[in-house]
Length: 260
Ligand code: CTP
Ligand code: MG
Image (cartoon, rainbow, N blue to C red; front, side, top):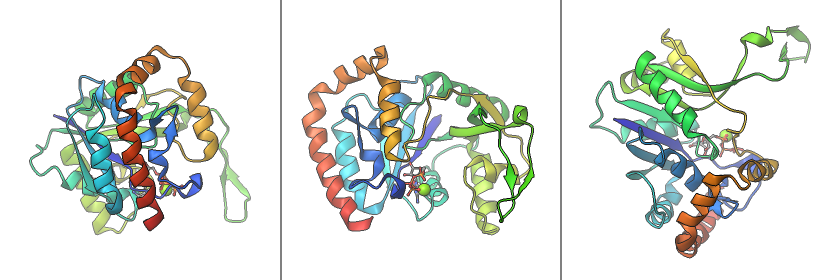
């Protein structure tokens, strides 16, 4: 069984928009819906767990009900930090087995390829933990608090990490339990597993798997999508539901006013 958890319960502060960035329109389709449909088109994926802010649960359910082509899904409420949102997603799967695979994917990465999704699933089955990443393009410096360079790690060893990140359920659960016990907050899911001393393997992804974070990212994403065959098929699939989806988006805009 392969379940994908989508943390989408952030506030998107850097986007400075009037709606949670995961519901922003990207060439006619909300960012979150694009992410969910990419995973739904992967035969290895069984079901989806979408984690949103409490105030957005109902409207998100109504949006997903109006979206054709999704794998079985549920919507649960998130927490104050991404890590807690993911944990709420894990807890929503009480019947899961130890060797089930759980993928975690930022709802804000709508351009992930099916090749990357499958690569992460296969590696997680084989090794227990796998993360999508791309070789670092830039030279990276380690600096101290005064901005003085401490050292320059060899670029050939540096990977820029993305999502999805995939784990055997038992591994992800143990990692989260230990993080809570030690009051550790990581910037990704794999960092919790690394603290257990377990191996995590990189799966080479592509530079198009960007995270929608600031307004320029929407422009960038649009140009990556333009006129691909996949995009034409998606537009066809959603054409009939556009109006109904639009209504759900309006109520999500209202909900956002209440908690941003
Ligand atoms: N996320 C979440 N729960 C939180 C914080 C973030 O589920 N408490 C989700 C976001 O919705 C997003 C993903 O984690 O899909 C990656 O986080 P980020 O890009 O930082 O999104 P935000 O926290 O919403 O944005 P910002 O940091 O600009 O406020
Ligand atoms: Mg954030």
